[in-house]
Amino acid sequence: MHGNEKTPDKPPVPDAPGGAARAVRADAQRNIDTLLEAAKDVFAESGVDAPVREIAARAGVGVGTLYRHFPQRADLVAAVFRREVDACAAEAPVLATEHEPGEALARWLRRYTRFIATKRGLAAALHSGDPAFEPLPAYFQQHLGPALESLLDAAAAAGAVCRDVDANDLLRGVANLCLSTGEEGARHSQRMVDLLIDGLRYGARPAAADLPPRPDKAGG
Image (cartoon, rainbow, N blue to C red):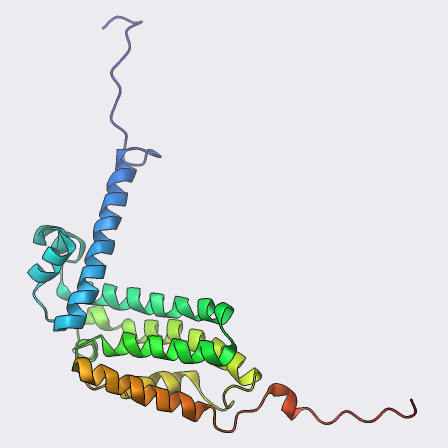
């Protein structure tokens, strides 16, 4: 090869910014997102034991692609669970900016109810002893607990709900109201949670109500 001859362009190395490797990673992430969305819908319709072929077909990918990203069914179930927990927690600050504190709390509890009611078979899976599920209860508490607590604190300060409500107790209470399955079960859960929300308002008073009366100023 002559010294002044240009060498052919080399393919981008895996870590090259903006190269083909980045496009592959982006494609892989899109496949993962599509699979998780499809799995969420299939799990809601058929439970977490639904055939993986059904999930792959819903996502428009091959079964091999699904197994490449999620070698075990438990890996897929856990990923869907974490994704849904993240989405539910992320709605808390959004609702807090768009609605009054009491309404924001009520809307988030209904959103959480839908999250619980559509996870058919998830409770049994979480208690199956599979190591893939061991971190999930803590993940649930660490993300949803603070989200709900922030809404509860704001609603209590505004006098929209009573103040002696523990966020983790409320999370468990709503989950216990969502044990029914099927479409009618989901509607029943929503009605029960609406009653629970009404109960949170009993004895509510704004934070200013606890302040001692201001003494009258002498004169003037």
